[in-house]
Amino acid sequence: VQINATAINGVDTTNLSSAAPVLLEMTAKFQQLEFILQKNDETKPLWEGLLKLTDEGSNWPSNVSMLVDESKGTGVLADSWPSPDAGSSYRFGYAGGISPSNITKVLTDVCEASSGEPFWVDMESRLRSEKNGADVFDLDKCYQVVEAVVSHPQLSLCHPEYLPQTN
Image (cartoon, rainbow, N blue to C red; front, side):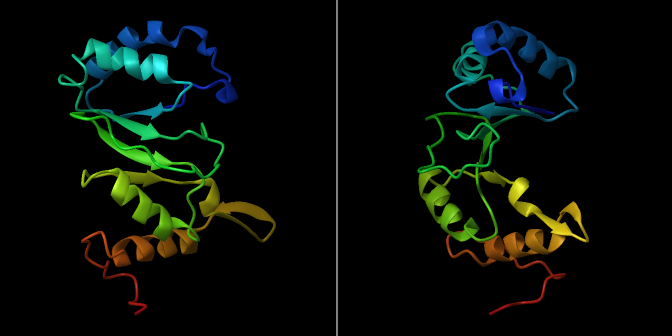
């Protein structure tokens, strides 16, 4: 369940902090679900409220991740990527304007920002193409991203057997 509580998504953001206790209750009730909370300046009252309720993250729910996306889901590439909060126990990912053409640079920047902590990237709009007059999710673009990830010098990943080696 991805929670993008931003005005661009039609959310009244004037009192997001009051939603933090409800969100925490939901994550406890539905532990079999993964909750991804968009983390940006607009959603700050919600994620800060959740941090406060979990003793600054020391009791963070294991089924909640943070998605750093200052573009708020609009697909605009960030100028810089923030480091995770010191001592955070939540998993985190990065989003915003990431594409097959810039994934290598983004990974380099994010590897530095993440200070060695594991992370994930989220992209969707830049993985779409128009084919036969229809907007489709383009698996060829996904394969390009996978190739860039497994080939990245700062990441120690194995090359998937189903993709041909390009080097």
